[in-house]
Image (cartoon, rainbow over all chains, first blue to last red; front, side, top):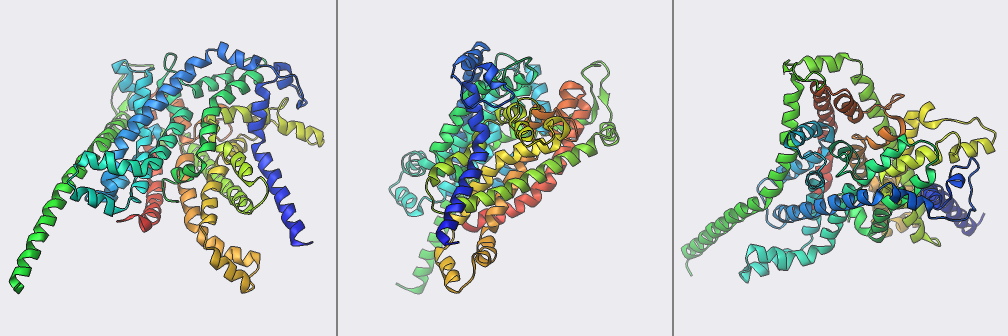
Length: 271
Length: 310
């Protein structure tokens, strides 16, 4: 076998494997456009007359309310986390805090702490204060959950700012605020964006806290999808349509920001 | 300029530097404070409260019957027979999912590291499972892949005249691991692919020139180079998967050896309404995670600090 045919074979194998892995997503997408009888057919149907009934049914179930809640929680959480993380990451990279390692391990240890360990008191406290089922409260908690990772990621981007630039700006007598906002931030904007994206994705997809801390008014999309488990009768088309809508924003964002995603997921360890 | 002058100047500069440093440290601490305080309020304090809860008798079904019980909840938790299977479930699910997604991730990283038509598209399709909302992923797998009647897997089985399998009830652990592996393979692939692309091409060419075959180049050069990336992937993957809840809640509801610690706590607290006992499970979960995380942290620091200090 020539190395050329061998190469072609590997390419074919690659594509086959990729398509197998992608298949469930493709199938979810396709099922969303099928009439319910075709979606739930025992023999998979590749050809059908597409309909928007599934999507319509998802919105009839009140999906847009859950989407708005998810959007509110994710955006608010991201804004809070980013605003708190910028000064912290700055302190841990460009200014040097005493005991950087101590501070960094503190941050990351809170991320390693299982949510299960803190959810019970949070539930009780929020219940006592009458703050359960409140989307802003959920957002604040999401911000806390994602803050450590956001700080770590941003720090790795801040470390790449040439120190000479910061020094020059200090010599010019720029204050701390100016130094951060006018000099450093523009240089690390892609990093801040990547951290924000990761924070948004994690908040958007979060299921455990949303299930426990919200019930109706503040319910987000993941527990709404989870409620399909108890569905009766035929519902695969609706479920697929709803899942497609729920997954789409993050999928598109992830596709667009593939490069930043790698660094984000590895908390900046990989450039 | 005399020698003493130089000394004074140097001494003066030194104190100046020290003063600047001190001020810098103070403002740096101020910059750090909001994030730290926020985290203490949201995580450390609730955890202390969890420890407190774990030492009181408190079942929401009997609100009057409350009081300090010391280690009773822990005794109940340890002797109930639910804890150990739960630890086993958590460890098995985490270990299998991490190992499988690592192997598949490595395979895909190697395949996608080559030049071939449509490579960018293939890569984009490949990362998608990681981006799909986990709740949606679990549901799609449960119904359109695993289902006995309408699931694709069983359609394949039927077409091949193999027995039909009810995945989420007959092989619940496997079903959860399959879904997690599917979701985390892209995660591992992205990290390992970055590692492969960060390889020194010169060394690889030199190895080829020296007559090392593909396999030897891979085991002697590529694998050692990938070690750091494998470590990062495994550690971060394990830390996320050890808390696994979504696929368990949706696919199996904790049946058939899939009751992870997170699910057990959820069940005790929010279905059994036993706050005290659930809190004890919470504390046990943290202790276990700390053991994993200490090992993880040590390695992470080795990796992160290598290039990180200024």
